[in-house]
Image (cartoon, rainbow, N blue to C red; front, side):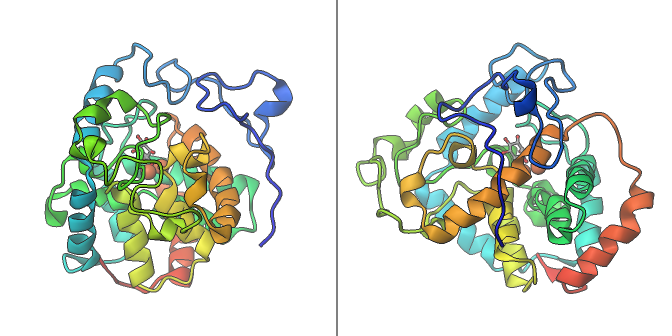
Length: 303
Ligand SMILES: O[C@H]1[C@H](O)[C@@H](O)[C@H](O)[C@@H](O)[C@H]1O
Ligand SMILES: [Fe+2]
Ligand SMILES: [Fe+2]
């Protein structure tokens, strides 16, 4: 797969204010980036005074204190067993009707809206990449970890941006100051640039903070999806803003990661900027997505 990507961000990231140059606002396939979110702020502004600011910061405080190398290892082992629930992809989408994400400054709608908004925005600009439409639909399904039948994990262990554990927390991570109370922050085994990793080791060998991304990646992979590797990469790293926006942790990537990152950067624009109060007509688009699910997944999956 070869693609051309229209670079939108400069090397300085993470930028709060989007570029004002008209040309820069148009993505490679015509998607126009909105300047403000539904609350009247720029997207991903974690400091703006808004009705969501305090809750979001508290979320990151708990998240940054508790996501340690040991915690992540345990969660991967536990949830990697996929022995909790059996259901289809669409059933899972419907479960997300109940879920609201406390980490998100840009959205307070039920998550199923966000899934459809993302998928439909991609579909409009990339009509022939059906695998990317489906990736949009399923990328956040891991948020079911918040529900009782999945162990009712706290928000800090499910949502929010992700980052590697086992090496130093990069300063570009949202609310980085709150890592000071994380035990790994002062552990010399885990607090250097490379920590337990080595140059070019590949992201597949890096443990990421535990949440909906890695969980959904495990679900898709273990249930033998036929989606391409770029789709699995998108699902697994879509919350890794330190990488795909701020270009941190590049030293851990291998060649395959570099290729897949191009698709993730395309995807991210739709994931982030499609968030709005405009609802998608679920019943109208459902047959299309059911056909994609049938193409790329078994009827029932283990979760
Ligand atoms: O608040 C959001 C939300 O939880 C998203 O699902 C996640 O992918 C983002 O990275 C995060 O910052
Ligand atoms: Fe997400
Ligand atoms: Fe998302």
